[in-house]
Amino acid sequence: MNNNKFASQVTFFILINLLVKLIWIFYIERKVQLNVGFENFGFYYSILNFTLILSVINDPGLNNYLVLYLSKGKSTEQHVSALFYLKISLAVLYLLLTVFISFLLGFNNYELIGLLLFYQISFSFLNYCRGFLKGHQLLKTEIFFSAFDKIILIIAFIPILYFKNNFSWTIKFYVISQIIGILIALTFCLYYLHKKNIAVFAKGQISFDLLIIKKILPFALFAFLVLAYNKVDAVMLALMLPNGDLETGTYAAAYRFLDAGTMLPILFATLFYPVVCKLIMDKNQLSKLIENSLSALLSLSIIIAMTSWFFRTNLMQLFYAENYSEKLSLIFGVLMFSLPLIAIYYIFSTFFTANNKLKLLSLISASGLLVNIILNSLLIPTYQAFGAAVSSLASFSIIGVCYIAIYHINFKRPFSSILWFKILAFVLLLIAMGYWLPFLAKNWMLRLIIYATFSTITAGFFRFFNVKTSRTIIGLKH
Image (cartoon, rainbow, N blue to C red; front, top):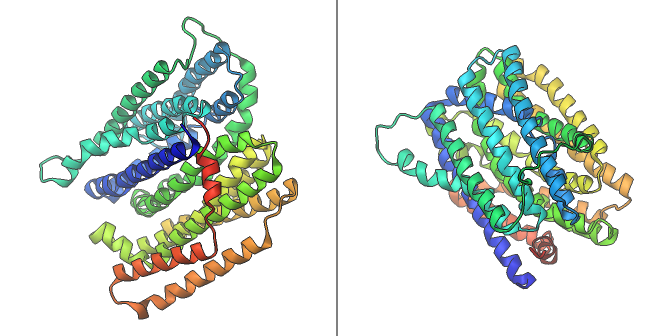
């Protein structure tokens, strides 16, 4: 298959993946929250994030290590098998430690904790299997399996959520359904790997390579710090406030849109990482690739962030109806400004990971986590969920600035000053257009269309999108 045909197919799979996850976030997860109530969903969301933060014990960077190992083409059955049994041992350790820590923190709904732990372990094993697909450059299939469980549940949930029936939604049913979806996807993924003669472990061969633990500790620390500064807000809201579940539910309703926006840089990083590993010795080509990728992702995320800010009230009223509040729209608007910073994170963390700069990544992430915890401790008691949103934006800002500065200093590959000038001019034009919108049209949807069109044309005028770079990223042979 030629590169152009493969690139077009990968692009198609990415668009389908994005569509599926957007449907899930906005039409399934949102509807579930409206059905069970903001407070009940907030309780679920806080425990979900708690189990997610500690899931680094379950997957201490094994996936990244696996992809890097397989991409070098030196895989052996013994080493792969050792990884697999190590993963099983870590899953047991994760289960025991999370239950113990949840008891210390006062999370006493052990049924929900148990279900979410099973979900996290199952999801981690699915991601582990997807790592084999990445490592063997089966990118189309990997993208498909990243959304397969959601496709199954969307088909099952839509009749229940959107047609009249007497079904009573509960968080327990929602979590169990997700577990079933993950297990089905995991089964199909294992079957596909078997058909491709890709061994996840060697039969009858149980081995543990303790040197692997030493190798993945930097991955583990980095993974924990990233999860912590991303997810600690919801846990602190639940633990610090008397109405913590309700505030967490409000925060989750706004954060949902940031999660949706983050899918683009996540999918980009999925394809970007193997390319960076391949080009790691070609500094000139890699530098151009990073600069072009940054300009494209940053411009797209700026458009989404600015659109969210100027239409925050309309969007929250549209999606949450009677549950709308000014507080919710403000939290949403502030959180979405984190998106360009998240795009910066995914580009540079991918680059630093491929260069094995895990200590540097961990130091930056630790700084962001420290800022987040301190600001949350100061702001949440007074400003509640809005304080958590400000803390989140501040931590992402510090991390983004650090990534860019250290890339310039350590790798001596400074971006063209023209790029930063164009980005600044782009932002100023979008701000000006946002304040002119009320004079252009009364209907907010028409204003939204005008603003999105203007933003896209302006991005094209500044030449933020490089077709050649896109082909380089998605045009690798599978």
